[in-house]
Length: 286
Image (tube, rainbow, N blue to C red):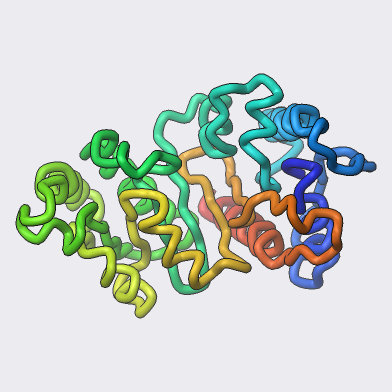
């Protein structure tokens, strides 16, 4: 359910009532049957509840009583207030609980798939944290997902540069040739159709026009700005690398509209549909 004081409960109920979702699977919603009215003093309690929901879901997955996971939005402040001070997000928490070392966030829309090399970092920290290994792992996970989940033969992947014009030969920074290019060279033995480092201002346009099957962005807003412009209402977050399929809607808790009955369930509907589709694809492969 995610944070019970956000729009998670509402979009889940709306999504499960949608004809697009009915009949796809047997669904179990993990959360409270009655959610108390949100107040400021409830933040820590709701944060604790959100983590308990996640932990219950993990137990169901481990025991074989669930096949895939769709998570509602959570509030990082609430969870940290509940005593989990290092909580960065669902992605990192699930990876830690499952012992997953290599993982990534892929965002899925009708005509664009995007993977982030780094996630929730201050912009000033990105050049220091970005390594060839991190970029290579993002490429490898994306390539594997395109082939395994989406059944794309010979995936075409675009890798964005970090700097304007991908550094323009070092005129605008050397990270593109010093860090990103070696990762692409190494990944070329795995992915034959890989391009980069490319200027981000053209890579997304080309991907949208089917030149590439996915784009690797170097940092959060480089990738999420164009993606959310296109798929703000129905984009889906897919975690790569976990031992199970996990999707989520591409929006937050939206406390400002929670309880008003006006939340748009489109992203939750697409997250559920994608989880069901990818699970069926994985079963056919196995």
